[in-house]
Length: 122
Image (tube, rainbow, N blue to C red):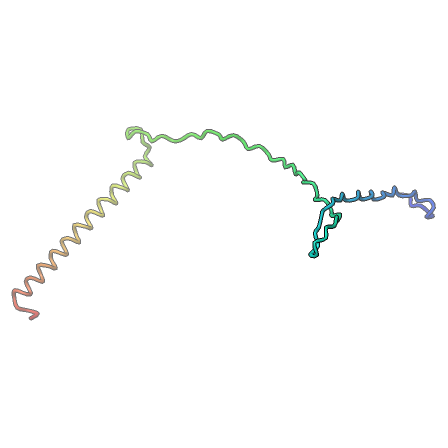
């Protein structure tokens, strides 16, 4: 890379002169003073409405999704059998628990009745 030896060897930069700002348009407005005198005054015109264009990407159309259909019992996989067996087993355990609790309650009621009749705990 060769550097210029003197400042005069440097080519002048393209000076971008700032564009002269366009004068703001003015409007005339009639103003009435408190004394009732009317006067015409120049006021800046409202800025024109700016439009902004936004480019949005298009959304992809919805794709169909395959919905699984439950297989009949004869075509179920062993995994589905295990799930059904587990559910049935949980139901049976809950029913046994209810029967055991009812039996314990009945025993407690009979014990209470026996104590009252025998005169214990008077």
